[in-house]
Image 1: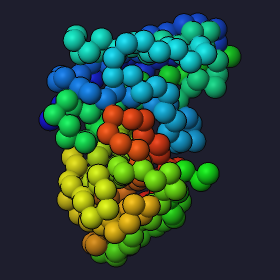
Image 2: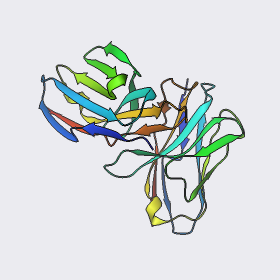
Image 3: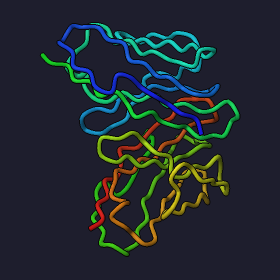
Image 4: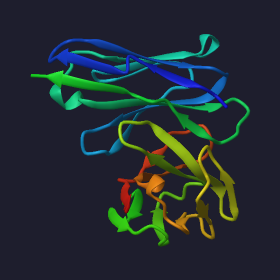
Length: 110
Length: 112
Protein backbone atom coordinates (compact mmCIF):
# COMPACT_ATOMS: atom_id res chain seq x y z
CA UNK A 1 0.00 0.00 0.00
CA UNK A 2 0.88 3.64 -0.14
CA UNK A 3 3.40 4.94 2.40
CA UNK A 4 2.87 8.30 4.09
CA UNK A 5 5.76 9.78 6.06
CA UNK A 6 5.58 12.94 8.11
CA UNK A 7 8.41 14.99 9.52
CA UNK A 8 9.45 16.05 12.00
CA UNK A 9 7.75 13.65 14.42
CA UNK A 10 7.94 16.19 17.23
CA UNK A 11 8.31 19.95 17.25
CA UNK A 12 8.51 22.48 20.06
CA UNK A 13 8.07 26.16 19.26
CA UNK A 14 8.01 29.40 21.15
CA UNK A 15 4.83 31.36 20.63
CA UNK A 16 5.18 33.60 17.60
CA UNK A 17 7.60 31.35 15.72
CA UNK A 18 6.98 29.93 12.26
CA UNK A 19 7.20 26.27 11.26
CA UNK A 20 6.99 23.94 8.28
CA UNK A 21 5.64 20.41 8.48
CA UNK A 22 6.29 17.95 5.69
CA UNK A 23 4.37 14.98 4.27
CA UNK A 24 5.97 12.61 1.75
CA UNK A 25 3.98 9.94 -0.02
CA UNK A 26 5.09 6.98 -2.11
CA UNK A 27 2.51 6.90 -4.92
CA UNK A 28 0.52 9.28 -7.03
CA UNK A 29 -2.51 10.58 -5.17
CA UNK A 30 -5.76 12.26 -6.07
CA UNK A 31 -6.67 13.30 -2.54
CA UNK A 32 -4.52 14.86 0.18
CA UNK A 33 -5.81 16.40 3.37
CA UNK A 34 -4.24 17.97 6.43
CA UNK A 35 -5.87 17.53 9.83
CA UNK A 36 -5.25 18.97 13.27
CA UNK A 37 -5.98 16.82 16.30
CA UNK A 38 -6.35 19.06 19.32
CA UNK A 39 -5.35 18.04 22.85
CA UNK A 40 -8.92 16.81 23.45
CA UNK A 41 -8.63 14.36 20.57
CA UNK A 42 -10.90 16.11 18.11
CA UNK A 43 -9.87 15.92 14.44
CA UNK A 44 -10.38 19.06 12.40
CA UNK A 45 -9.92 19.22 8.65
CA UNK A 46 -7.49 22.03 7.78
CA UNK A 47 -7.02 21.67 4.04
CA UNK A 48 -8.13 19.53 1.16
CA UNK A 49 -5.16 20.05 -1.17
CA UNK A 50 -4.31 17.36 -3.76
CA UNK A 51 -2.21 19.95 -5.60
CA UNK A 52 -1.36 23.63 -5.53
CA UNK A 53 -1.38 26.10 -2.66
CA UNK A 54 -4.08 27.21 -0.25
CA UNK A 55 -4.13 29.64 2.63
CA UNK A 56 -6.40 30.00 5.61
CA UNK A 57 -5.36 32.73 8.03
CA UNK A 58 -1.99 31.86 9.58
CA UNK A 59 -1.97 28.44 7.96
CA UNK A 60 -1.09 27.60 4.41
CA UNK A 61 -0.36 24.39 2.54
CA UNK A 62 1.37 23.46 -0.67
CA UNK A 63 1.26 20.13 -2.46
CA UNK A 64 3.67 19.28 -5.26
CA UNK A 65 1.99 16.17 -6.59
CA UNK A 66 4.64 15.43 -9.23
CA UNK A 67 7.30 15.27 -6.50
CA UNK A 68 5.02 13.51 -4.02
CA UNK A 69 5.14 15.83 -1.06
CA UNK A 70 3.06 18.39 0.76
CA UNK A 71 4.02 21.13 3.19
CA UNK A 72 1.99 22.76 5.93
CA UNK A 73 3.14 26.20 7.06
CA UNK A 74 2.20 27.66 10.40
CA UNK A 75 3.08 31.31 10.87
CA UNK A 76 3.08 33.32 14.12
CA UNK A 77 2.27 30.18 16.10
CA UNK A 78 -0.08 30.33 19.07
CA UNK A 79 -0.50 27.99 22.02
CA UNK A 80 -3.82 26.88 20.54
CA UNK A 81 -1.91 25.46 17.56
CA UNK A 82 -0.58 22.70 19.84
CA UNK A 83 -1.65 19.17 19.02
CA UNK A 84 -0.91 16.61 16.34
CA UNK A 85 -0.96 17.39 12.64
CA UNK A 86 -1.83 14.56 10.29
CA UNK A 87 -1.49 14.23 6.56
CA UNK A 88 -3.85 11.77 4.84
CA UNK A 89 -3.81 10.66 1.22
CA UNK A 90 -5.79 8.56 -1.21
CA UNK A 91 -3.94 6.74 -3.95
CA UNK A 92 -4.66 7.70 -7.56
CA UNK A 93 -6.16 4.30 -8.37
CA UNK A 94 -9.29 5.48 -6.58
CA UNK A 95 -9.21 2.76 -3.98
CA UNK A 96 -11.32 5.04 -1.73
CA UNK A 97 -8.94 4.43 1.15
CA UNK A 98 -7.86 7.59 2.98
CA UNK A 99 -4.53 6.61 4.57
CA UNK A 100 -2.95 8.60 7.39
CA UNK A 101 0.65 9.39 8.22
CA UNK A 102 1.91 9.01 11.77
CA UNK A 103 1.65 12.72 12.47
CA UNK A 104 3.75 15.64 13.76
CA UNK A 105 3.26 16.44 17.43
CA UNK A 106 3.51 20.20 17.95
CA UNK A 107 3.86 21.98 21.27
CA UNK A 108 3.76 25.76 21.28
CA UNK A 109 5.06 27.29 24.48
CA UNK A 110 3.89 30.71 25.76
CA UNK B 1 -26.32 20.45 11.70
CA UNK B 2 -24.87 17.69 13.91
CA UNK B 3 -22.31 16.36 11.38
CA UNK B 4 -20.88 12.96 12.36
CA UNK B 5 -22.14 11.57 15.66
CA UNK B 6 -20.59 8.61 17.47
CA UNK B 7 -21.94 6.74 20.46
CA UNK B 8 -20.91 5.84 23.07
CA UNK B 9 -18.06 8.22 23.95
CA UNK B 10 -16.49 5.80 26.40
CA UNK B 11 -16.87 2.06 27.01
CA UNK B 12 -15.13 -0.63 29.02
CA UNK B 13 -15.54 -4.21 27.80
CA UNK B 14 -14.45 -7.50 29.24
CA UNK B 15 -12.49 -9.91 27.08
CA UNK B 16 -14.84 -11.92 24.91
CA UNK B 17 -17.76 -9.50 25.11
CA UNK B 18 -19.26 -7.96 22.02
CA UNK B 19 -20.50 -4.47 21.26
CA UNK B 20 -21.51 -2.15 18.46
CA UNK B 21 -20.09 1.32 17.99
CA UNK B 22 -22.67 3.56 16.41
CA UNK B 23 -21.96 6.20 13.79
CA UNK B 24 -24.48 8.39 12.03
CA UNK B 25 -24.10 11.40 9.76
CA UNK B 26 -26.72 13.92 8.65
CA UNK B 27 -24.84 15.41 5.70
CA UNK B 28 -26.05 12.88 3.11
CA UNK B 29 -22.48 11.77 2.55
CA UNK B 30 -21.81 8.74 0.37
CA UNK B 31 -18.51 7.70 1.88
CA UNK B 32 -18.03 6.60 5.47
CA UNK B 33 -14.98 5.27 7.28
CA UNK B 34 -13.96 3.67 10.55
CA UNK B 35 -10.49 4.28 11.96
CA UNK B 36 -8.72 3.26 15.13
CA UNK B 37 -6.04 5.31 16.81
CA UNK B 38 -3.72 3.64 19.28
CA UNK B 39 -1.93 5.83 21.87
CA UNK B 40 0.65 8.14 20.28
CA UNK B 41 -0.01 6.73 16.83
CA UNK B 42 -1.73 7.72 13.62
CA UNK B 43 -5.10 6.50 12.38
CA UNK B 44 -5.49 3.08 10.81
CA UNK B 45 -8.40 2.39 8.46
CA UNK B 46 -10.57 -0.53 9.61
CA UNK B 47 -13.45 -0.54 7.12
CA UNK B 48 -15.00 1.87 4.70
CA UNK B 49 -18.18 2.19 2.66
CA UNK B 50 -18.88 4.01 -0.59
CA UNK B 51 -22.64 3.80 -0.26
CA UNK B 52 -25.55 1.91 1.25
CA UNK B 53 -25.04 -1.83 0.88
CA UNK B 54 -21.36 -1.53 -0.06
CA UNK B 55 -18.49 -2.06 2.38
CA UNK B 56 -14.85 -3.02 2.06
CA UNK B 57 -11.85 -3.80 4.24
CA UNK B 58 -9.24 -1.25 5.15
CA UNK B 59 -5.79 -1.76 6.64
CA UNK B 60 -6.75 -3.52 9.90
CA UNK B 61 -10.16 -5.25 9.51
CA UNK B 62 -9.55 -8.39 11.59
CA UNK B 63 -11.85 -8.69 14.59
CA UNK B 64 -14.41 -6.20 13.25
CA UNK B 65 -17.51 -6.21 11.09
CA UNK B 66 -19.56 -3.43 9.54
CA UNK B 67 -22.82 -2.93 7.73
CA UNK B 68 -24.31 -0.04 5.78
CA UNK B 69 -28.05 -0.48 5.44
CA UNK B 70 -28.72 3.26 5.11
CA UNK B 71 -26.77 6.27 3.87
CA UNK B 72 -26.80 7.79 7.37
CA UNK B 73 -25.59 4.89 9.54
CA UNK B 74 -22.38 2.89 9.57
CA UNK B 75 -22.10 0.75 12.74
CA UNK B 76 -18.89 -1.09 13.69
CA UNK B 77 -19.27 -4.44 15.43
CA UNK B 78 -16.73 -6.13 17.71
CA UNK B 79 -17.72 -9.76 18.21
CA UNK B 80 -15.13 -11.10 20.65
CA UNK B 81 -13.34 -8.20 22.29
CA UNK B 82 -9.61 -8.58 22.87
CA UNK B 83 -7.15 -6.34 24.77
CA UNK B 84 -5.51 -5.51 21.41
CA UNK B 85 -8.71 -3.69 20.47
CA UNK B 86 -8.23 -1.13 23.21
CA UNK B 87 -8.08 2.08 21.21
CA UNK B 88 -9.91 5.25 20.25
CA UNK B 89 -12.27 4.68 17.34
CA UNK B 90 -13.17 7.42 14.89
CA UNK B 91 -15.90 7.46 12.31
CA UNK B 92 -15.65 9.83 9.33
CA UNK B 93 -17.65 10.71 6.25
CA UNK B 94 -17.22 12.58 3.00
CA UNK B 95 -19.60 13.61 0.25
CA UNK B 96 -17.97 12.00 -2.74
CA UNK B 97 -14.50 10.87 -3.51
CA UNK B 98 -11.83 13.53 -3.41
CA UNK B 99 -13.48 15.86 -0.98
CA UNK B 100 -12.73 16.68 2.60
CA UNK B 101 -13.57 14.20 5.32
CA UNK B 102 -15.38 15.08 8.55
CA UNK B 103 -14.75 13.18 11.77
CA UNK B 104 -16.84 12.27 14.76
CA UNK B 105 -15.54 12.94 18.26
CA UNK B 106 -14.37 9.40 18.83
CA UNK B 107 -15.18 6.45 21.07
CA UNK B 108 -12.61 5.49 23.67
CA UNK B 109 -12.77 1.71 24.15
CA UNK B 110 -10.92 -0.25 26.82
CA UNK B 111 -10.91 -4.07 26.84
CA UNK B 112 -9.89 -5.63 30.13
